[in-house]
Amino acid sequence: MVKRLYDIVLLFKEYVVAAFCLLLSIFLLALNDTPQIRVLRSYALVAVGLLQDGVSVVPNYFELRRENDALRNMNLALSDEVSRLREGKLENLRLHQLLGLKERHEYRYIAANVIGRNLQLLRNTITVDVGENDGVRVNMPLVNESGLVGKITGTSSHYAVGQILLNRDLRVSAKVQRSRVDGIIRWNGGSTLHLYDVARTMDVQTGDLVITSEYSGLFPPGIKIGTVSRTEAMSGSLFQIVEVMPSVDFTRLEEAFVLVSEPDSARISLEKQPH
Amino acid sequence: MSRTVSDILLSILVLLLQTTVVRFLSIQGIVPDIVLLWIIYLALRHGQIYGTLAGFLLGLTLDLISGPESMLGLAALTKTLAGFIAGYFYNENKTLQTLGGYQFILITAMVSLVHNVIYFVLFLQGSGLQWGDMLMLHGVPTTVYTTAVCLLPMFAFARKVLS
Image 1 (tube, helix red, strand yellow):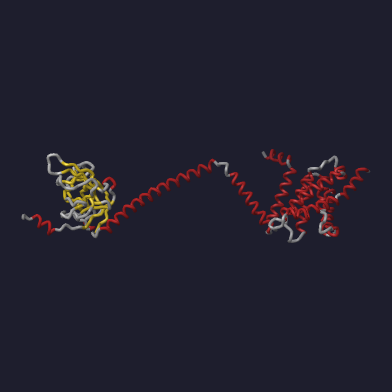
Image 2 (cartoon, each protein chain N blue to C red):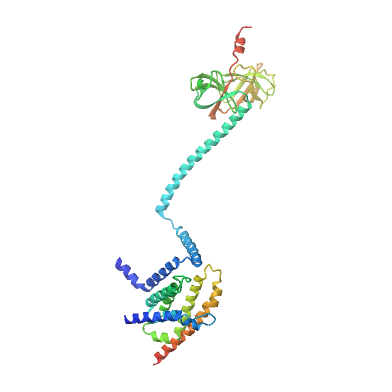
């Protein structure tokens, strides 16, 4: 190997000597700190940059692999971050809407996260992460930015369970906002609620807003329940079928507020007395 | 060995002449480059490596004795190249014929031109002066003057060849 190298050097000795002398001269030139050398240095820098740029086109397998790994890791971390940011954005949006709800009503609200759902076909309940220690009591309404969610039916110190509108045991005194027609909201299964006790002569139209009525001893009046999606006169009956699409999307329920509205015990006891 | 020693002594003499006497031959500030002439002679007489090394050492010496205003390494670079290019025309069997013939004039003219172009291109960087103008003003006249001066040794070698 060394011999071969020596032979090559010997073969091109004139060039080797010239190259050595020229390099030495250039080195000496580089030691100068004159304007000429500064300009030449900048040219050299450009030339080296172009050379490096050209060489960089040739891929280095090991470097590429390492870069690929690093990029993959970065991609993973960024995907995770994007996911968390997206989640945060959606949460922010929901909380904004909840804040809007709080500003619309003068009641006190206890913010709660829905931490569990118990979907037993006809008796659907949710569990929230606030309880008696937070001031939550049985029969307090559960709402969110879209409207009425349900009511609290059981409490512990830190948790509470609530019936949602899609629970056969829950009945809500309601009224059609436009025509002030009263009725009882109840769920019989399916995707819609029903407004009962509405006489077939009453003015109820598709698209009408249904809200809680002032006749309810549990729910404050004016809370949105849903919109009328279908009406149909029952044959051989004095009443009509009124289907109401709930305004709350129960499939995507993640946060709710417990509305601190103590039932008017005096009113309830009075109403319970025989008159 | 004696050849090298004599060449070194003559080189010193040439350097002394270039820095002292030659300026009296100045025409409009243009002086012949007899150091370059000497390097071309050495390259044609002894070969490319000899010419290259002689060019480098003489150029470096010129740089060192030219004072702080000069660019250290510039003369070394240009004269190395001059020796290297002149060495291409080295012919062991026809040394005297080359030195005593028109080839010497042509080689001197060409090498001197290349030498001056490179010298001025590098020397005028960052000065704001157009190197083309300066080459026409100084480089080409120096080349012409140096080539003209090379006629003296050429005739001397021609006589030697004829005799």
